[in-house]
Amino acid sequence: MPSAFQDHWELRGHVFGTCMSHANTDLMYINIPKNASSWTKPNLTELGWEFYNYIDDNLLHKHAIIVLRDPIERWLSGICEYFTLYHPDADLDNAGTAFWELLVDRVTFDDHTEKQIFFIDGVNLNNATFFYCNEFYRMYVQQFLRDHGFDNSYSHYKFKHTTEESDIRKKFKSYFEPLLQNEKYKNHIKKHFAKDYDLINTVKFYGSR
Image 1 (spheres, rainbow, N blue to C red):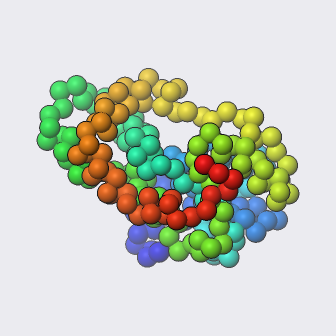
Image 2: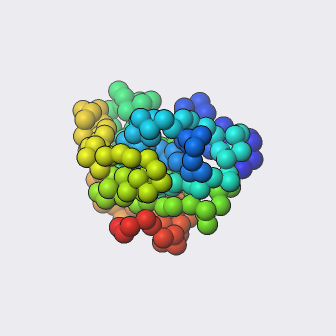
Image 3: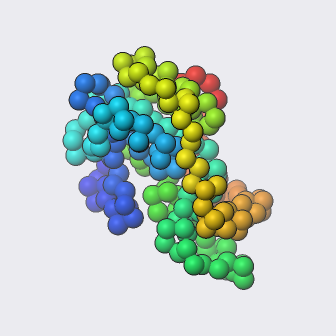
């Protein structure tokens, strides 16, 4: 990945290549925001994993743990996160068509709404295990970590659902969820994330969806 692009979202708090690993394992977990990362990171920290950058720290030889999520579902969560963090006082009740057209035309505003493929740029996808971000993720990651020597009971740990726990996020979800009922807008967003869909439809996921 070009160095100029690596820090593209640094001002928003994310540097491409961010990952977690442990000195005694050949595994690395690649952090993709809004893909159960708020649940995964503290659990790995509990196991003694630390933060690295697979680009700067030359960890591309390690086996990657990659979590992917339905792009539309992730975008909805991500755009709510973006407005909550940077425009919490925005009142969209009277937003006109021009606002919604501009929003959908751009799609990506920060790391939470960025294409998932960018977070794994340069990674050997043949040396990776993919997980799908759904209701089975906790169970599958628990089993995978146990098989690799990290005993845990993480399937019993509940997800951190930031949208459901925040009134501000709920407010923005009430604006953006109906937007996806517009086929024109939804199809434009899906086209924007076409390469994410291609990846999801190509890789083999641990367990099953």
